[in-house]
Amino acid sequence: MDDHCGERAAINSYSLVAYLPEPLSGFIGQLRRELVSNCQARGHVTVLPPRPLACPADLALAEIRSALHDFQPFLVEFGEVRFFPQTNVVYLSIRRGLCDLERLHQALNHGSTGCEEAFPYMPHLTLAQQIDPGAMAAAGELVSRRWQEFPFGRGFLADSLTFVQNTSDNIWIDLAEIPLGVPVAA
Image (cartoon, rainbow, N blue to C red; front, side, top):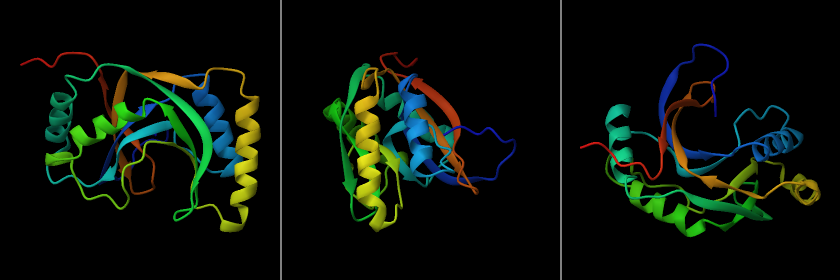
């Protein structure tokens, strides 16, 4: 979710994500481009799905930092290829770290960063969205094959989260990285 192309018109849409490290990030990025050629988003697990804020971003960020002071780094491990048929999304399930991600979401989805979400929160790693329904099976087969071929670890240490903002051309800009397990100054 990086901005690599100069100035963009920021909009009132924010999210909180855990980015994947290399080599997992590079693999997921390439796989996403195989499925959707113009995919630009960095591989990540979403903690707070996109939402408008009712206050300035710096106040929401301060609230997030405060809420995260008790959360320690944790392992996230990906599992099977799955689908959200209602939204034509292909994703990897989360085998380890699911409860940690759900606890983070629950702790953060209120106050200035809360919103009523369209779907219940389900931690996952999106690989492609808005796939033509007729292409879902083929996309699933490609992802399954590539995932089996991946020679490295299937997870990462979630030791920081990144607060991001969307732009009018749907490019996400990193606003702040928030390490887990670091006390907040009073």
